Image (cartoon, rainbow over all chains, first blue to last red; front, side, top):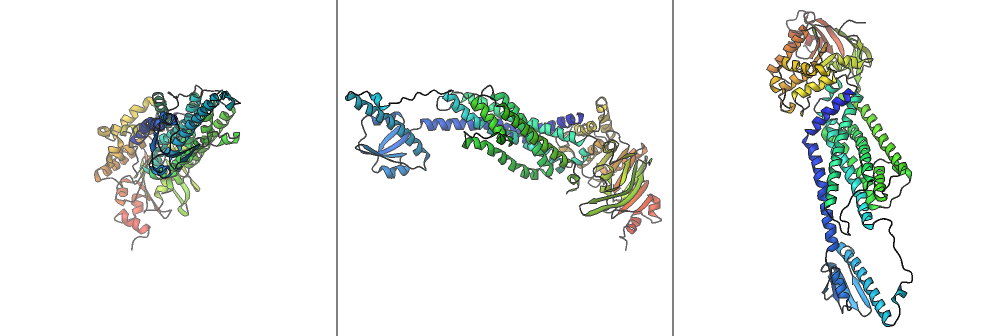
Length: 375
Length: 242
């Protein structure tokens, strides 16, 4: 294994002297807090933002105060329907025993204002009905013959933060592992060909499998460094910023952290091997970029599934699909605060097999005569 | 079994659809500069790549100091040093780091590493730029680094494939002097070139390749065959003389 160590050490020295890789890692550490801060500010602003409601007619007694308390500002307009297209967020026409609501579903502000209005009107109607019943000597409890007692099995605030983490953490982890090792992988394969050092390297007595293993280990290391930098900065930021809904701090569960480290190592190893195999196919760094860039988009897709289908509960076979399995295992650990050992075992085998197959493919490519003779 | 440093017998190689070598044979001995001459596309570089185990023969055999390139490629690579016209060095490593990296991969013992690296740096007069990053070196300086990394493990067989084609007059002269010095130290030096003047001055024996075949072989005087210049004999052999 001496040759592997020699190649690893040299690759690490070169990587750490490469501005491209250092910039990628630096950006990873800076970009994550920046994105999180923007999300926090936007969501806080959305939750507390005041919306305007244009109206005609007489506002029912007490409703104006309720609307004002929930940041729905009443503004008299001549025509609520036309005003709701642009001038105001909602249009209301108060009529005896009826309220006509006008809104544009294409506007997100209209949808938020509508939700807020319906909540307020529900409370107002219930209060009015209860008051009317009381004046007639009837217990208002008659309105709710079945009383629903809600018993959440975990903190709703924690659940909200888990939902956020279950998407964002795998996304950041996978993105940073791939982008962190991207430049290093291409530099140590296509770069060797481009600057004509490959032939000299292959002329040494070091076995090619050991040389390749040294390269894969170096790329895996730098991928993990990028991922750790991004995840660490993400948790530091999450501890500082606040989100609406009472979730002051978002913190990962005790189960998620070691699992995340294990999954990160697996992804970094398997994708270092994949990018090295693709890089070995390329004659130049630029050509290698063309080969590897689609990989980035393919791997981001599984993380998006969690965003669009949060309750996606697949069969065990889905855990054989690389990257998707990592995303699912992390999501399960974060949301349920526990580890399903069966799915983790399948995921581990799948990612190790992906890495081993890619390593074998890279080795085959690395020992092909065409590597040197193809111009 | 041949006692030659490099023995090539009936060597054949096809690359793609092109039959590059059609059964060539020659032997190179320790303590001589053996010239491998031929026009572009004659098969010189392919021959050296086969000798250095980068390519595998389709037919025939190559032995380096008794080791078959197919059966014991790593043993062969321990005993050779190759310098080519493509001066590829690691740009973000210093000249010294470049040399040390190849010394380690060539299994120079750790305890001996510094002494060996210092020795080649001194021998090739690299001291003044040894700690500079390779990206800032001139072509001549890079070629010195390339030679240093090829000889740092003190191989008995040295192969030079058009080593001066990208160099200026001064740097070319230094490379030629180094080849002569290596021969005097008992090394087998195989020199591939199409520069007849260099071959005539440096080589003890010559093999001329043309379209993948040996068209002449022997001492420089024998190959010249009474012609005033080696170039005249060469042009006649490859059918380029009117």
